[in-house]
Image 1 (tube, helix red, strand yellow):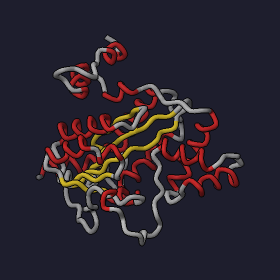
Image 2: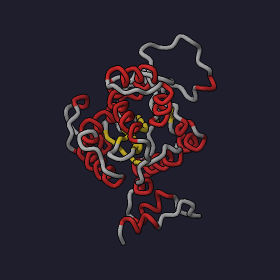
Image 3: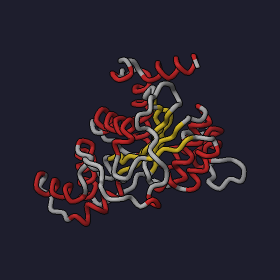
Length: 282
C-alpha cells in the first residue's frame, strides 16, 4: 500500500482511535494529513517571503515599519492594510524593544512567565513550542515544533496548512507519549496555546504552564533560534516544491540538527548527545 493510500484511510472522526494512533498504525507521519500548501496571489507570496526573511533579523518591526521597508527599500507599492493582513496570516507579532509602561489587562494574560532567572539543568525540565510560516515555491505552510531547552533537541515537529488548535494538541500529546511530560511548558499567548483543550492536556499531566508576555517573542528565544537555523540553513537555500518535498527537507534537517550539528551553547556537541546521556543518568 502506498503512502498516499495509507493517508486516505485515516478518519478524522474515528470513534476510538486518535489521528496520532491511526498514523502510527498505518506507519505514516501525521504531517502527511496536511500536505496541500495554502496559496495566495503571486505578489503576496513574494511579499511574505521578503517579510519572513527580514523579520527574522528585525523581530521588532511592526506592520507600518515593514511596509516602509517593502516600499522604500525593495521598491514595492503596497499599503499597510495589506501588510497587516499578511502579518496575521503569517502569525507574526512584533516584539517591543523596551517593556510597555501601560498596565496589562489581566484577562489578556493567561499564565505567568516562569523562565526569568530559571536555572535549566536537565532534560525535560523545560519545553518550548511555537509555530512559524514556511515559504515555498508555490504557496506556503506552517511548521510547529517542540524543543527541549536544556539539550536544544527538537523532540517533535509537524507541518500543516492551517494553525488550528487540534494540530497543536496532536503534536503535544504525541510528544508526551514519546518522551513523558516535562516539568514546564512554555509558549506564546497564541489562541492555540491558550485554548481550553490545550491547557487541559497540560494540566492533565501536571505540567507547569509558562507563557510569554504579549509582544515579547524573545521570551521564547530557544525555539526562535531554531526557526532561524532551519530557514537559513535549509529552506531559503532550496525552497520546497510542495508539501511532500517540505516534509522530506524538514525531516532530513532535524535529523542533522539533533545528531550532527554542534551547538556552542551546550559545549559544541549535538543535542542528542546531551539529551540521551543525561536522560540515561537520571
